[in-house]
Image (cartoon, rainbow, N blue to C red; front, side, top):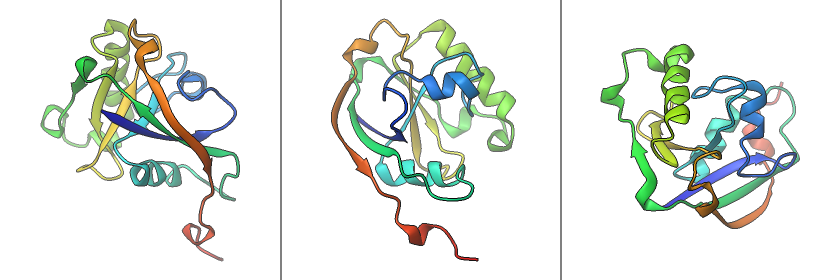
Length: 149
């Protein structure tokens, strides 16, 4: 399967370093995790909800090949009501998944668009070397995505 990632050029795309430093919806600080999505459009939506001020200028889009035989999926039905407003719940799930190394990838619902899927990649999984960046290119945010004052 393919995953898309939109990220700052500061870190290697499959290291999970940014998430390790600050944590995220599905991981606690100190745990590397690569956040990706089923489409570049979802990556954009996920990024925009975190942008304050000027749009980033140092982002790159990545198309990643993920081996189909090491993927697990978490459905909306498996999450408690209000999960999208409860980062402690999702972090506990993600931290457990990372620790147990059950799969290389975990497909999860998007809190921004719950009918869409994000793809979490464990850079410390024994199969992480099988992840492949198929393409990458600089990503320019359209300035119309930011409202004018």
